[in-house]
Length: 89
Length: 257
Image: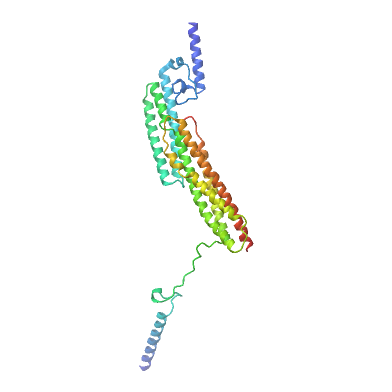
């Protein structure tokens, strides 16, 4: 009987100890909420206005491709504006 | 008797020639609507008045149908135009709707006419009250063109900002930026020019109303077309600058690796 009681007490102590560790430690790598004094890890945002020449050149390529389409559309509209079955009326 | 026969034959030949050369409109008194066509002898016209009235109806109806087809095609164009501003789209839609309604009513009126004089008035109304070809067609396509230019200017201004930052960064890093700064300055000047050229063009054009003075209407549409063309020229120059700067920036990026 004493042995059973001792085993039960040990199990309870181990459980309490484990629960205490879980509550106090980090969980899934997340920090404690910032409003409770913990730290929050965030991915740094790219600096505003950064001008990586390669990235700018690539974006300009995209812009210029779109602008070529706009010019084609513009020329089409100008041509249609000049087409008329009769210029008299 | 022989003289009468000759006269009849001559009349038939003349009528045939007139029909063949498309001068029926002139013989029907529609010269106001077709000023370039010559008038035919009155005697021929009066030979069969009922037939002539029917022919006139068919002609005027066909000309109305041609205008309605153009208006419907323009309606499709403005519905599909991705870069047309909401305000311009609404204004154009109102112009097209009004013209379609008016010309449809006029077509019904033409069907009920019994005299050449009434048909002549209808033909004049068809032209002067709507000006589908010299005004509405131009309003639609030049407004679409102006709004495309506005969209292109906005896109180029964004590219201008990015290219400017790239040049500044390269310069700050001690790299030779060549004539990129001069190209960038020219790009800005061309964009300002394009924006100034197209500014207010569509609104002014959409305010033009149809009327009897065709030359005044043409002067206004030609002025609008000239401004849109000026805007296009400036845009092309700005795009050329952007391409040159892009190439310089690419070159610097490749050399820095």
